[in-house]
Amino acid sequence: MPHYEPWSEDRARAVIAEFAHLEGPLMPMLHAMQETFGHVPDAVVPMLAEHLNVSRAEVHGVVTFYHDFRHEPAGQHVLKLCRAEACQAAGGDALAAHAEQRLGCKLGETTADGRVTVEPIYCLGLCATAPSAMLDGRIVARLNENRLDKLITEAQS
Image (cartoon, rainbow, N blue to C red; front, side, top):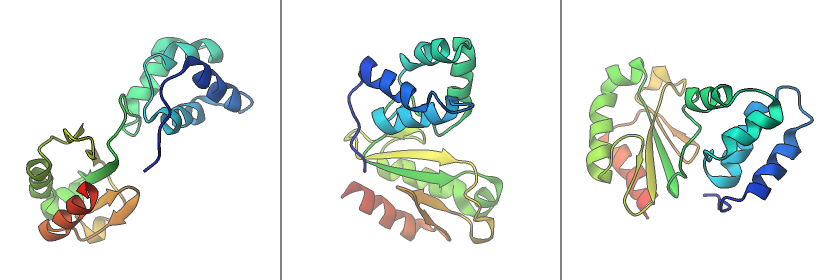
């Protein structure tokens, strides 16, 4: 997993400057902030609003609309469980409950040791091979309890 930099206003300003030349730079700036700091720090919102000459509410609205933007850094590994209808119909609810029980945290949370963040995702595009998940960007289809346990063990080691 990537190593994130500690928060720095100077570093955030450098990220903003890196994308300032783009047309419609807000999304690339937000993605770069998350890649740099592991999340989109609250302090970035007014900085972006000022630079882009938009309201803080507009920036905040974009950050909160997209599920992939985090408000705090993720764990060392990120396990995303598909929660879309096809995966739910194929047993996804039971798998999500199993993951929460095994990890000791709810969807959207990180384990106490900081090793695994488990997140819902709404469609990985694998409906024909549901249920599905993604561990650190690697997609796993035809998920069952045994395959999920292997993913969790991999993420915890």
